[in-house]
Amino acid sequence: MLRFKLVLLWGVILGSAVTASPLRIVSLAPAITEILATLNVTGQIVGVSSDCDYPETIKGLPKVGAFLQPSLERIASLSPTLVLGMGQPDSPGFRQLQHNGTRVVLFHTPDKIIDIYNIIRQIGALTNRKERAGDVIRSLKDQVILMDQNRPTISPAVMVVIWHPPITVAAANTFIGDMVKRAGGNNVIGAGYIRYPHIERELMMYKNPTVIIVTDQAAADAIRKDVMFQLTPAARRGFIVSNISPDLLLRPGPRFPIAMRQLQAVFTASVPHE
Image 1 (cartoon, rainbow, N blue to C red):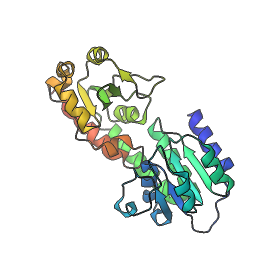
Image 2: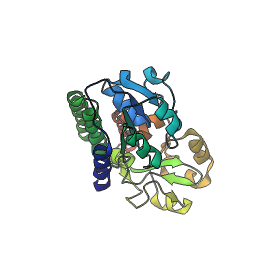
Image 3: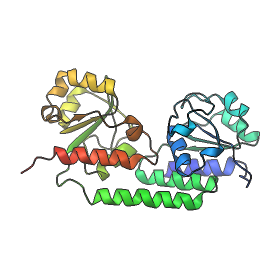
Image 4: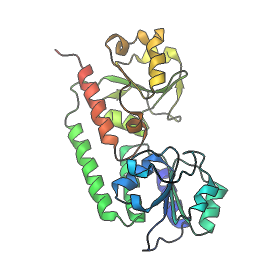
């Protein structure tokens, strides 16, 4: 959380002042673009990364390159007043944009759901949408509280596989891990220094997951052919699940409650009926 606060502070201190005139916003991350749309400021977005594909209204906007490798030249050509990113490292190019009068705010990728709320609140302040941001956050919190009240009676042992091979999983100290916990699951991969570690197949067997959530269809196909995975309770009981959209599972944006509801439905169905 400290690192998250420091990144926010860096964006606020080093950026130039936001005026009352219409903003020209470039969004470098899909989750940021979705937050901007939820705050009703899509009309002020002048460019997005090539990975931004939601909502439909932004698909015709100029692209400034990939999420992790944006083109600073393309960004500069759009004359933005505000550049928002998530997960991108600081670079001399961003500092040059700021030197030329563009405010740049780079958010640390959330580790918990509360971090998403904080980002929404900060973007609301940056875009003069504080009241709207407050409404969005209250709605999201209400949805999470409702899911807390409807957790399954028994927490299934859950593993979230991001990729295979190698087996790449989401640890408990990720926003995915937080969603699993709040939806009623027990993430078998505990918190660690590496938030999305590669694990050995033997460890996967030792963890003995009863539910395996897979975020990539190709990885799911590989898993279903893997003898080691076939030996897990999740495979034996038909709970290797790959039909939850990766856009919902992997993007720490305002649509995360949809993913949580789908996770909770899987967890509830996986609990043996007496």
